[in-house]
Length: 492
Image (cartoon, rainbow, N blue to C red):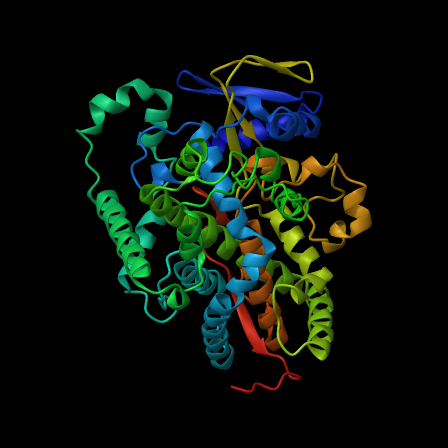
């Protein structure tokens, strides 16, 4: 299958380390795999204008086709410019109460599992938790998938994650895109159409409800943030899109935001510029929809992998719990600002993402014939960035198969090439929701390891069997035992 082919190519990259890239074909489309960090810096940052778009996937329907990962060119720039400030550190602070509500439900459920004494599929628990978070912060709707899996929102979302871009029919259309249009009508997809219709109507209804409410009564979530800026005249330029390197935060402090008023208020050119920068309702629906992919499966997988690794390495778990206990000796509650003090927690998460990167590969289209570091990249080809290979390349990582959080001390990071670790991508196309994902993961792990221990048991699969459809995740779930910590007094 395709995954096996990709792994084989990664193996070729490993044994032929003198090569900077290798290629293969999907039908008539050439795919060039890059695993050289200097080339990646050129492609993703320095010469971004030659590789601005993700790989074209034909046949996408609304709302997916209007989402940030599918948009191209000027439309992508406009939407990304509007969206980037809604994920700023200041906006993250507004998300903490919404995340806390889902966290409280998660902790109650983990307490029940701990009291039962049975092993639990922690991956499933986290899937429900992140579903609750993303429904709340992106869709503005309150669901309890942790206790009500039959909720219509949960039901339709699960249909989305049952879909994979790597089904044989999708590979066929990627290989022979000219056949998509004549054959599309012969291949109806009732489940997909029902799912799309549900989310489109759900978000349209929510937008109407928000518009009918006075501003002070509108819920502070990402849907509302997008509605607030949909006709705004402020925008960010391309160089401020890089969330991984905090370029968006620098834009605020360095006043990199263009007010659009250079032509004077009321000027016709200003009005046209404002109109150009607005988000359409379709685009708002599309961004809300893609938050499902960006905020659900990736975060739940990372949480599950982190707990799995800590269960297998009790010495690391003990060190984390000592940091957590010390944190709560100084702070009554956790918020966006003070969780940044948890340096060892950050190292644990970073090492978990190195070993199990949810986005284990991603791609760019080549818009023009380009030579990068002496290697010709032909127009019309696609570049595959081999994140999974980079994260375990022994040239850059000592004993790469081992879980060693100390790889991510400030000194260790400074000594390493920055483009051998790419869990959130890099450059202007880096993950716009990175801060939300990190906040959600940190808040959950902080409260979990304050109250509980994670332990490997006879049901724990070692090594894990992985699946690699949409994102990298555990194929059979992750079974562990949970026990209450003796020194924690539960106030609930």
